[in-house]
Image (cartoon, rainbow, N blue to C red):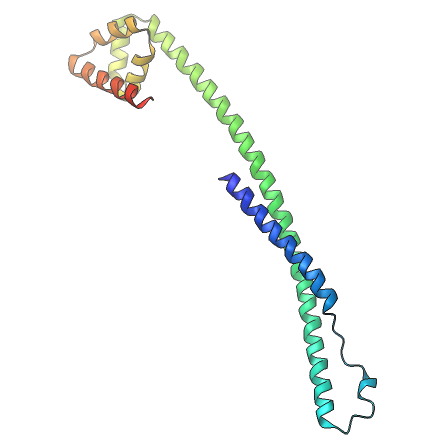
Length: 179
């Protein structure tokens, strides 16, 4: 998922960069100026010329406002791009930290399970059978699949036959699914 976020952020940043570059070219080519007063010298008696000059002046103002808005948006895009980049970096760091945490937890969990298995291997079969009979079947099956085979056989022999059958079925299912 973070890889997908990285690529999406990169695509957005690329589009934003292209928009900024395109905006610079557009701003340079479309600089508008209101009609200078000398343009109308001698034409004030022609209403069409005055109206045209006023229309051009208003359009020039509108273009200037649009260019100013484009510049503002360009700044917003640059700020958004910086935020996206910072967020991507933060997500990458979080992903790396999560991977390290999971690796540490898996190692600790595995070490804890190995110690637990060693305890059951060292117990007398009748004592181990009493405890295992009280555990949930899937957890008990996990323990029985990991203890030494001869210790597991002696423990199962001490468990009620009906419950031993359930545990054996769980053990077989675990082996078939690869858990």
